[in-house]
Length: 126
Image (cartoon, rainbow, N blue to C red; front, side, top):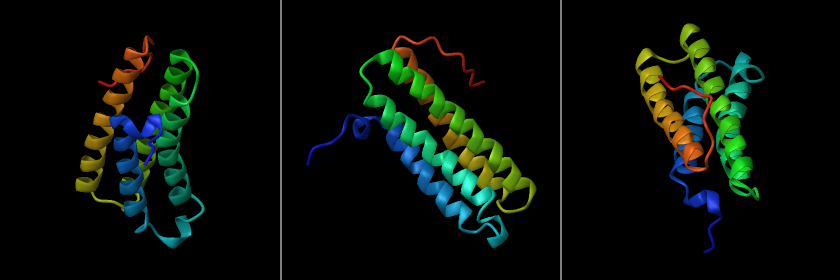
């Protein structure tokens, strides 16, 4: 079976796992959050993997790197929204710590891939 370029990227595989984790966590959010936090955090998570995929299909490394920056920004949005979920008691501190660790690793991968494409990253991860 033919694979698209993005499917071969470890960073996309990690983003896909993030999507799965976010969907799993957000299923437990209260129903009154369905059109608010639940929807927003899922869309932000999807944006991470989608921008990696879209960028990989671009004609230049500079374009690809630009989409990786957008993916990085979406990842930061996911983390910010997870803090809201934590503050509201929708997730536990342990869940937050686990997913933050995964997100940190994904952020490092995004920055590293961007650097291999010749892009000087404006993002700082620590």
